Image (cartoon, rainbow over all chains, first blue to last red; front, top):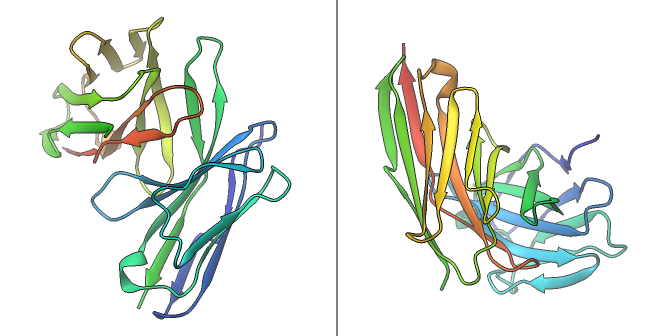
Length: 116
Length: 111
């Protein structure tokens, strides 16, 4: 079974530039998450999709961050313009509800973003 | 507001030691608790604990969930240098709600 695909693996940009990340979840996983993980902290949710609808984007800085999942499959996350504090690892995850009723997250390889 | 706390935040041990990592939570309508190991960027799944499965074991790793006291522990026996990583705890509420992560415990196992 193919895992969650993310690209790019690394990105270095200057502040005020724009950047985009791409994620393709595991086939059949309806829920997709974008997390931001700043060094030394746990992942923080940016946005959660259920199919192509947004479930939770309450922590997404909407003045500079945007995300879409147009056909309910792959997703893109964009930052424009980037700030120094956006330097972090951006993780995409998709989820599956197990037979036990619990929900398990599957993560992509992540994108390390450095804003200079 | 949902909250997940992990302790200790960092831990240094020697190979062969046993470690216990703690995760306590306050989450509305608890559904499941997940443990992950993060060595580089991508967290890898270790255990899922739910109301119907409060104890899990895999090799040298084991975990229990105490739903009454709202915490979980992750035990690693006979630690190896390959266990060095950040261990993340995440808690989910109702299906469709997002998972809240703790800050992680950074474990360093010295030879």
